Image (cartoon, rainbow, N blue to C red; front, side, top):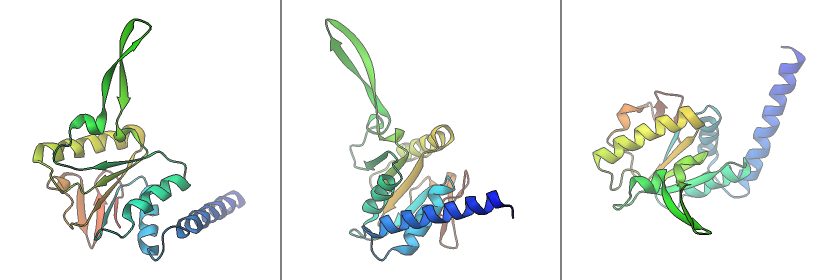
Length: 179
């Protein structure tokens, strides 16, 4: 191996250790999950984190986004969730007697998005729309999605994008992980 590759590999290893050291200040006892989330993030994939409430799933992802200086947003799936709650909306601004429409971006424009409890309250049309939006955002903006749920079932339309093989979540678009 040439010297440039060796130096690059050493820098990656140093960076990984610094990230882990910072994460361990906040997250305790979740080393395997942390490792899987880092793999998903750095390979451009998505991640499904399952676990009972209180296991710091949201804290892990938010802390990781803070450490890496990435834009983090969380989408809480509720029965009244509207498409504009995810994509954003246009609002009417009135300045100095003139009116204009201004687009306010929704959480889908973040670099890391935590989809909290996506299995709850999703109808089939919304689920299919989210999967399609997820594909487009990954292609255009390299967005990483983290699905957080206490339910082992991702969502009814997940088979269009994901397969679960040997306990690992595999994204057909890129290498996603089940963490």
